[in-house]
Length: 195
Image (cartoon, rainbow, N blue to C red; front, side, top):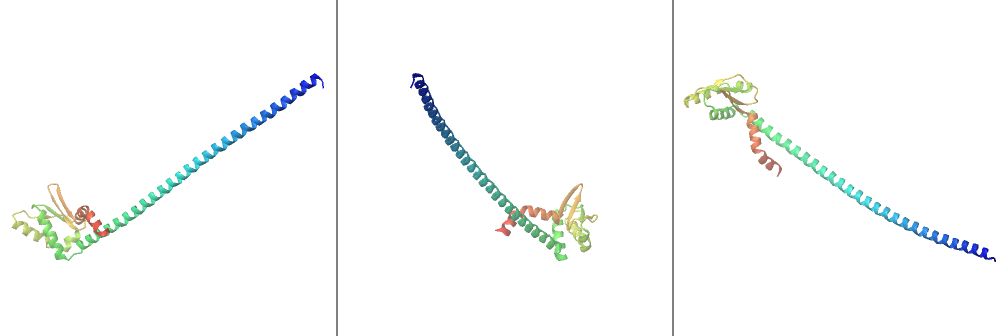
């Protein structure tokens, strides 16, 4: 073999070895990149899975909270309806009590609130139902040294009465009395009804 051929063969052999070494290095780098990419992909997948699981838990928790709120809202509405029925029943009992008892109730309340000389407002039903009420009241007021009441026009106040004098109105309608009683007794009534 000639010297030139030997050098060419040697160059080709060195080139093959260098090529082989470069291919092995490129293969190692590619494998390392692939392994790193797989690791990053697995880490990202784990992050996404954890975030998804957390989101699912949070949505479930919110749904449970909303269901609890809805149940409480429904329970409160049912309790409120029962309270409404209880106070409506009390109003009906007052409106439908025997005339003598109702007249006694009105007389006692009016005499306790009247200063004398006021205008007495009754609902039309009570004016018809209790025709002697004004005479009874005025006799008691006169005996107490107060001016008699004047019967004003009938107003639909739903039972009870109003006393008007010099721009001041004392509202003792059954609606006002029950509203005040409800405000004062609602907590106690709820406790008795629901505990």
